[in-house]
Image (cartoon, rainbow, N blue to C red; front, side, top):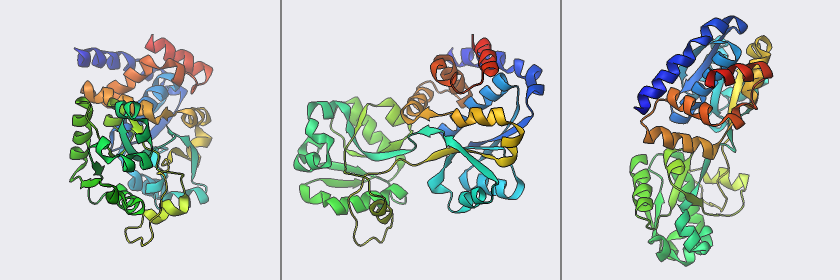
Length: 322
């Protein structure tokens, strides 16, 4: 029934865009191949079509292909959910050449990583909110650290932190998961039974939207130490918190000049990382499409998205949603 209702809403919302298409030209935007990026793209598409009258083309892509396409073809117009730490030098070169403009963070504070425990455990044993407290009381987290799967970038950093803390000397067993699925399952199984759990996770993701987790304090962030910890061959790993990964929206310079009001709106289109995790949890629980999540978000968060739009677009989109 929910799918039917949301589908009907999508059909109703799709009609007015045709009449308003002359207000704004053609716009191309990436849809990266992961869930949060798909939600961002569908929200942006709705706002551009229904608020600004744009004719939007969605381009399935990934980080490096999107940057390469802009370099070679000047398209797509908009790259959203661009994880800056995954672009290599390609994006920086485009910025230096004046071909792209960085509009702002699409996720605030960005991609989050860290070591976590369930909040009910943190409330019962506040000392577990720090790594020192966990190492002094390993039995309270069932004596185990749930590590990243082999081959993941987080595995390298976590392995080096494990060495820097000498984690196993405190009596904690390091359990190396074989896949992201087993890591997520271990968290879910523990939380649903209100049992101890301690391990690495990242967001925005379904588990961090579905389960109430508390991030364990590892210490101050030190850029040099963290960058060294990213090296699998590091011989002197140190202690540093995980930084938030910058996740951006960028547009071509040509698009910013051609559609300045839409570019201005995209510069303000941002989600709290925890909000995106909650949306992904709703998507998972309802077996919903990214389009349906966009409708759900726009229908329930007017206090957020109305701040992105100019007066005319705000009036049009509000009328459509009501």
